[in-house]
Each structure stands twice: as structure tokens, then as C-alpha cells.
Length: 415
Image (cartoon, rainbow, N blue to C red):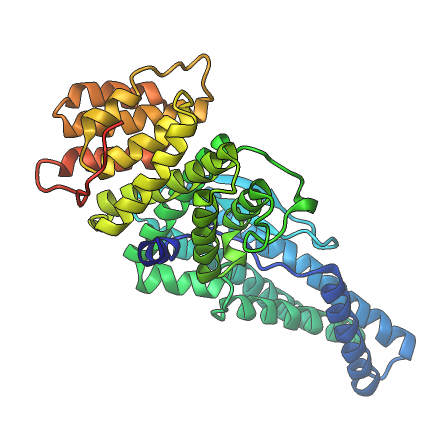
């Protein structure tokens, strides 16, 4: 797992766009410092009362919140004009919530790099345009204090716009995402598609999860050896927020969970739950790597997946989640007949919708390998459109199967 998993985790792209988070305390400190600096500047440079200087400084500081709103408004207008799907808008400059315009563009959309560049430019350019308007407005007033306040507000707008254009370390940085779409559009498209695929993998894992517990009880999977379910729940929480955890930590946790599942002291039901989660998580990513990236699964990785899948299947052979895990192992072992046989009895009215959709798509892969492309197309339609990225993986396998095998075979006993 360690060798391959690191490569796939690097593709994880959390969200297409987020404005960086600023906590209420930091905002208050920043606003207070700005207010103090403005007050001192006005008191020294403007021949007005200290009260007037403080009032002008307060106006300038309040304009910061207005500029934050205009920044998001700029992103929103550009998204609407370019027909980029907007799925969430949150503007709350006085709270601790993140200001955001959340879009979900299709990775294969026409002229996507150009549209994304314009989208990320929308917020900063709105700030810079506002700064230009405020600066021009100072010429129409003869009151020194008003002129200074307008200039201060213009300066805040200009600084906000330019700061957002500077590439930052955060994946939510406008400047960073601008550079990615400008100079690495192909890789950025791939990361976007991989991020959507990971959302589908996460949905599947949530469906098959067992023994859910409250977040307040979650600990470190490395040290929760006495409670495998807590360890599994904690691992899944870390994976779902993988951008806050290093890849090395997640890989280490996965390997320790695998060892916990194999331990004789672990309850069979808990071991099966762990084995299902790890098999499905890794197996689905191996499918993606093979079909989309053209990277066949290494022999050792297939052996590990097979061992975990056997563990889950032997404990719960009638559970659809266990059959899905076992079918993944069979596919990776170039045994499509066995994979198909496990997924023939799918009950949409009984099994969870997310899980039977994945089962239909895995069976479609098996049918592709067996040359039954018409049956594969029927299964894709039966799965519905909720798993678009996994459907694309199936389509890629269907198209590439006649060219070369995608998976490295490894021996595994029949079940």
C-alpha cells in the first residue's frame, strides 16, 4: 500500500475554490491595527480634530468588510457570465465563517483553463477596479478629511486585490490557482477530476462504514488498538479531511489498520469492517490509476488487496459491501467471471443506493473484460448518473481493454 497510495493521495484536490479562512480574532486584531495606523496618519497629516481623524479611520476600516463582499461578488458575477456551475455562496464578513463562492466545473468542459483563470481573476480585479473608482472620486471632493478617507478605502481595496493575486501556500489561494490553470492546465484538470472521484470514493466508504461513533470519541488510529471501531472511525475522519493531514500520516494509519484487521485479538466483525474500508478505498483508486493514468497495479499491491478482501468476505459473505470488496480483488487479479458472479444478485430496493450503484459499475467493468459491452452499457444506465467519475473510469476501461491489460495479475484462491 505504501508505494502506490502516496501517488494517488497526491492527486487529492479538495475543492475547486475557497477564499482563505480568517478567524474572528485575527480579523479583529487586523482591523484594530489598521484603525490605529489610520488614526495616527490622519492625526498627523490632516488638519482636523482627533475625533474626525478617528471617524475617518473607522470608515476606512469598515470598508475592508465591504471590499471582502465585493471580492466574492466579483467571483460570482464571472462564474455566472462564464456559466461555471455555482453550488454555494457564503458571504459573512463579520463572522468566523469562510467567505466563499463554491463552483463545480466539469473537468472536460470547453475552454476550462481560460474560464477558470477569469474566475480567479474576478475577485481581485473587482477590488482593484473599486480602488480605481475610489481614487478617482477623491478629485470630486474638496474636504481634506473626506479625501483622506476615500484614499484610505482605495488603498485597502488595492491591497486586498493585490494580496489575493500573490501565490500563497494555501490551495485556496487565488494567485496559486491562477498559476496552476495558466501553466499546468492539464495537470490541474486531472487533479480536479481526481478530487471529484475521491468524493465518490468517500461516499462509498461512508455507506459501508460500521460502528460509527461521535467525533468527540475519536482518537488516533495508531493508539486505539483496544477499540478497532474507534480506530476505523478516526481513520475515515482523517481521510475525509485529508488536506489537514500529511500523506505520510494517512499511509501509516492505513497500514496500521490493516495490521489491526489481521490481528487474532480483533473481533471478526470489526476486522471485516476495516478490511472492507481499506479494500474499497485502495481498490477504487487502483482502478482509477490503471484506467485514467495508465499505471497497472503492482503485484504486491494486488496481494494485499486480495488478503483484506478475503478477510472481509469470509466474515460477511452475504453483505453487499463484502461482495463489492471481493469483486474489486477479483478484477485486480484478472478474474472478471468471479467478480461478475458476486454482483449478479443486486437488490436496489434493499441495498443502499450508493453501494448498489458502485456494484453495477464494477459489474460493468467485469462485463467489459468478458467482451459483453452491450451488457456493460445497460449496467451503466442502471447505475444512474450519481457516480459520474466512476462511470468515466468504466468507460475508459471499456475503450482501453482491447489495447492492453490494465492490471498486473496475481494468484488468489477461488471463493
